[in-house]
Length: 450
Image (cartoon, rainbow, N blue to C red; front, top):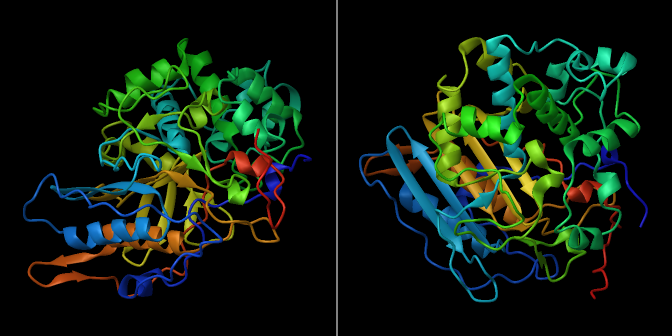
């Protein structure tokens, strides 16, 4: 199969779901057996770990998470906070062969949410005066980005994806089987950056937002140059530990070290049945997407960030200075941080998508209302003729859970009142993924299996 330029693929983690709020009031349509594998029998949702006086409708949250499984998602886990109240839940299975149930405390590959951690590390150095946001990247990495391009692309452009640098996935995956053969392949970040810089640019520096993992691989190399440490060590010491996270780490091997679910990739029907990708060398994503975390840790991280405990006020303002991210006016992208405008107000966070693992983590501006959601089946539907991802009941159910967690108002003794108007769709993912680099036919056939 020939390569497909990343700029021609806009793959979504959570695709269009019309009238999400109306879906809160009526059940979603059943999933088509032709589009997604039949789900295993549902398992019960875990109850709250902190009961008390909350603004959380625990039964509604549990029900919406269970509905996500019923619509075809193998398994999901979620952590929701509202002030001092917290709820955790899980539905479905962690292993489709054994029926091992999901647990809310599982470790999870968070993909592109890693970018927020990397951006925080860079902004910390901005606050210390060792990096200037609007300085050319060529000042710091002249050997990697030389000449006019190095003078035109700034550090800020890397962090908000307006650099015009293409991605390197086209050189790693030319056909679905490459995902299998790449499980234990280790990649050098400098070589990944060189592949991206050698590709045709997606635009002029500063012209428009074009999401690319390469930007954050280069940001990691910038951290290494400025601090003298590996970026993974620096982020661990100055971001992860400072936030008080106990289950967040850069994996040192293709294996996760703690309890986790198996992670299944369908690749729009090219893997049928889905292939399992829990074991994978994530050096291909590095400081752009290799972190492992838990849903509780993600909520703790974003609350610490948004309340000013990780970087200064000026640096946080820079992170929240946004540019348009595609055609969705409700979605904008800052420096490793996206904003999404809901009927109940603006939320901040990020999403992630790597083979078999999808994640959302969103918070109100003050960090008081939060949801982090992980799932273990990805690219479960096919593609439209234009290459965009088809949506379906799984996406609707995912949107219902996110909106209910962020927007529902609890009335003690009276149940939850949903917000008065609905977003017309979930935002398109800003998470780059391997399928953007594989040319997939409009009606994909399962590849031959060895």
